[in-house]
Length: 263
Length: 302
Image (cartoon, rainbow over all chains, first blue to last red):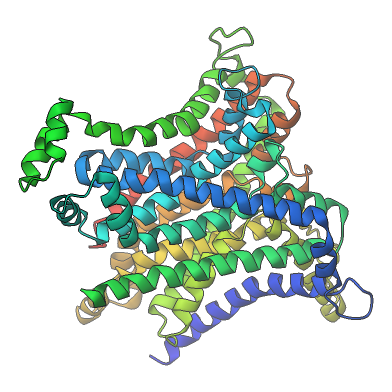
């Protein structure tokens, strides 16, 4: 048994080298803006850049809007379909997986053609309308992750019994959804939310082709004009992704455990 | 009918009977927002492009756009795209499989598996422009690894023909999110590979090799092929990494389509639709195959 561990150990070490070297290289590069010494100068320059603050804030707001809208769309649908139309579940699931099949660049191409200024719904005619379209596009991109997380969460609780209990206490549908179902799938919604945040925050294709001042296009611009700042930005982006994933996993694991204890 | 529903909304203990009655009433309204959203922002925009691919500038039916896809430039773009996707998906699948096998069946310390699975979750989402920056800092002309190899071993990878802004550069970069994605989706399949099967095979006198060729690989094959297809589609649709890494020096389909949307570089909007249609066709087919293979694979995971 001991001898057979050599192979797996080598695999892990090689993989660790491949995955950690780019992070180390990027970090080292981001620290070497001032010749001869290691400093956080590149980070200072990035944080002092008003464009960084504007675009990052824009993307955070877009991500939060997409998360709220996505949850508003997905939670009632997943609940309603499970409760009343179980036969529709595979159809809904198939639709939610489509954004993984249709590349984002194709999707945004369709948006630009369908909602341009000479169409029936000229969303791209105004900045506000384009922002709405961008957020709706992000909702679409996050649909596979959001729906899967929420639907799995709904599968883990007995929504039928909870609904009947709520109804026999005289609660309306909306009230049951908001005060009984939602708290029970909160962990699932949050885990979908963090994944959405990680995807949206640095998203480039939609934001760039819709001409919005988001973080992704800012990254691309800095990448072509500067030397050290891109590395600092890459480290920041990695930290954001890492934080989102860790929060997602810790939230995903804990409440299920708690719920079991309470029962 | 709405009167019946209102009556049902009042307090009643006969739940199931009421659900039956309500099925005929306005319950379907609850699914309208979702389907409306899906049609407006997912299906209609895609259908618009697909229909446009079969129309000429006046809106009449034509196959000229699809024929236009076979011009040398576009064929070359599809070819490079498919090559990069196949290479990064193939290598990603093989390496990801070995990595997943090592953490599931390798008998390594317990903390390794959760660490690698968490890191895979991060790395599979660490795509786009920051990933391109990271690889420029690693394997670019002044990258850490490039300089290390040159100064320590005297190996100049750029003089040997490597360039991060090239086919292999892009493939190596894509593998940074392909391998972790492979790990995440193949680990459940490897968990389904039961220890008892291996023991049974060994007791019956099978060699290790026979166990792999006659038991483990046939069980895993649909999963492996399915994962390969998923990785392929994943790489094929990616734009941001390639855009930030290579600018427009590597002519792949998503970059070409990006330039077309920006400035109609093909001088024919409908040819742009055909380009998008071709992308949907390729990712659609590989996903369809993936679903079929996945259904076969799941028979063993119960």
